[in-house]
Every structure is written in C-alpha cells, then in structure tokens.
Image (tube, rainbow, N blue to C red; front, top):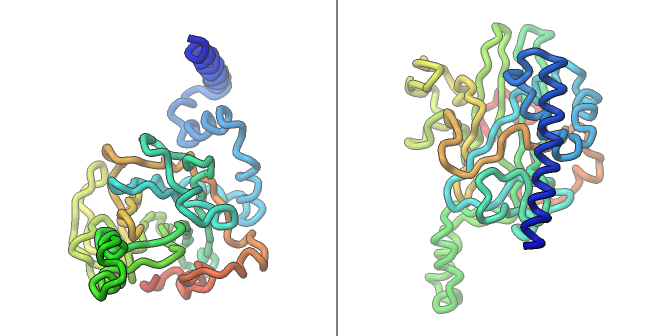
Length: 304
C-alpha cells in the first residue's frame, strides 16, 4: 500500500505540472493545443527541459535551419522484435545500454536510461538555387541481416562446425551500424524524404527492393494522395515516420506508427555532427561513420 500511495502522489504531482503548463500555454497562446511544437514543449517541461538542445542546434545551423532540423525529425517505428534504440555512441555501444524496456510501447529511453539520440547534418544549397538537405544519422551497437541464421550458427551443437561458420557468415552480423533518414526541401518548397536500406535507399515500399532504381512506382499515401513517379534516389513525399527493420536496421518510410513500438520525434535528442570534436570523430567503427561517407558531403548521391 505504501508503494501504491507513493506512486499516486508522484502521478498527481506530474498531472499538476502538466496542467499548469497547459493552462499557461492556452492563456498565452490561443490555439496552442494545435501548434506543431506544443507536444514537445510539454515533454520538455515534464522531463526537465531539453538540455539546451535548441540553443545547440541554432549555434551550429542558425535559427531558420535549426527549426527545419527539429520540425522534420522523424518519428521512428520499430519492427516487432526490435529492442534496440538509436543511441549516442559516445556513451553507449552495446545492447546492455541501448535496448528499450521490453514492455515499452513508446520508448524515449533505454532500460538503462540512455536517451534515443539522432545525429544531424545540414547541407544548404538554396543560395545557389538548390535544395536544403537534412540528414539524420542513427547509430546502433551492431547489425544482423539474418538473425535466425546467426542464432543457428551460435548454437552449442553446431557452433564449431562448418555449418555453424556458414550460418554466422550468412547472418551478415557486424559490430556498429550507422543508418540514416534524409529530408530534402527543394526550391519550390516540396519536402521529400528517404531512408537508408542496405546499399541504397527506400521510400514507402521496402519489397520489392527499389533502392537506386531510376524510377519508383506510384503509390497512394493516406492523407497525401497519389504520389507520382520520381526519378532516382527513392525520394518520397515526407510522412514524418520511418520504420526500422529488425536486426539490420534498414529503413523505409511509413504513413504512421501503427500498433508497433515507436519513438515519437519530440522525444529524440538531436546532436549536430558538425559539433563533434576531432577526437569524437576519430572513434573507430566496424563500418564507415557518416562523416566519411560520400553522401555526407553530397546529399544527392544514391549510395549510402
């Protein structure tokens, strides 16, 4: 009973905080409940602030570009069976600290308290008539293309046999994994996005794999309508959501979260890659980190 009573007191206090923030916002800004950043403002208040994140983004990108970076940060949907959150590699590089609580429907932090973190990058070519590109880089401790094959290869009975070695090789497992979600705001104001998927990019559809093909089929997106064919790079009208595949972390756009585990974009910690120190960029990874990829400098490329 004492524990239940304590929880009730804590919950009541939380509700009062939220109520005060809601009341102040509604009085100060009519219609605030419908403002795009209102949900995040509530989260920042309840979770103890955003740790100076907005100031850091503005210091690196300027106020306008920083607003774009925050506005187009994706919500992340996780395929069933996926427990790993994208994390800050400077503080976490294992499942021990990156896996979300098993029963969490919305996951902002891992079971060990590490926040879901995405590294950002901006390439602004509007000054020469081009587009504004925003890259969101997601780090995971490892990647396994075929999880069942790896499990088979590690089974005690066959682990030290040729079948075990073959199974582990087929699993495509490697330490460290960098995936990305990218946004393009063209000169006409159209906003498109794509997600990295293995050796190319994906839009709304993952199978058949249309990465890097010169054309993608037209599809219908609820609330958006029929999307006409666009040439190259898998750029697709932005939905605000990307789905992470189990094990490999390959991504593709989805219209919404559905009933799977998700991290709402307001809950992501955003860290500009441009703000990392030389030493932090000097960390060794089993795969190529974002700042050494050609697409980092040329965001129109179709390779990952």
